[in-house]
Length: 326
Image (cartoon, rainbow, N blue to C red; front, top):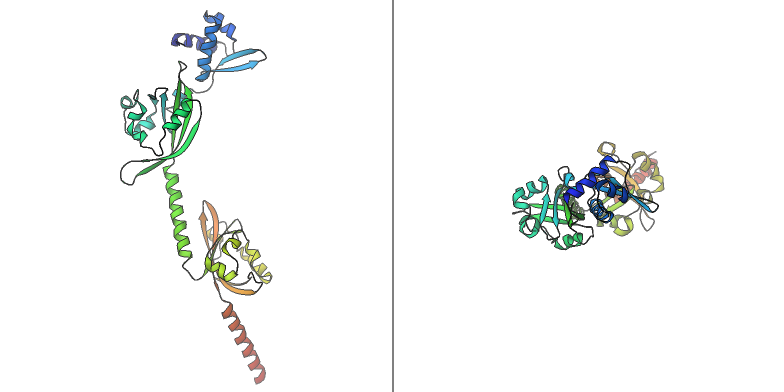
């Protein structure tokens, strides 16, 4: 269908004058055009977001759309946007796109998308997603773009089916920069990996508690408690603490802290019950940290059972000696 911009403007103009909506017949009379042509023009205007249609029984009523057309949204969006036609030629881009790609508008517009070389360096390749969008299927993927050296940019790219004012199909590429988010996630991942490597080399037990549940335990914690690491994950501290020391757990809130100030710092000697049901003494030190934006408590502890038994034996021996002297 050959689309006349003049006729499109005429239909939009008459709808603007009639905010309560008009039927195809009413529009046809107002613009002096046959109903068949009006219906085709309305299809184009609805597809491009300029006109909205509501059905009332057998009748279809058309209104001038209150939505902001895609072309107008380009200048407002904080994302990078490029719009290509069915022939893979770039028909519109916003300033964010040009700035990032280092192109002028003249260098980008009406060029084959393959010629916009920077865009095509995105990995994984995005041509299949562009083709899918041109066929009416919305797509999205996470991709990265390498710009020399060790500089990487990460994006979430959405591929949206769209249409131009003449009714021709197109595809909009909306690129959201998530580089900073990915950098932080990578740093957290590296920090966690370093922590885990360090935790596995120390002699003492280490556990991390989040939401009152053990989220991490090292091999030393497994050795001291008698539970396998996978058995410790998901347990609460109350399941390990000796009943005589439940009060200590409650008083010191050993399984919860809102911030570093609310986390006890000094070491505490408490009793636990290992998997065999035997009582063991540990010296426990607490620390506060945040993992994935949520508060967590790191618990470092050493098995002091032998020392406590030796102290008890020494006290018993001293008491017996004092009794003899008396």
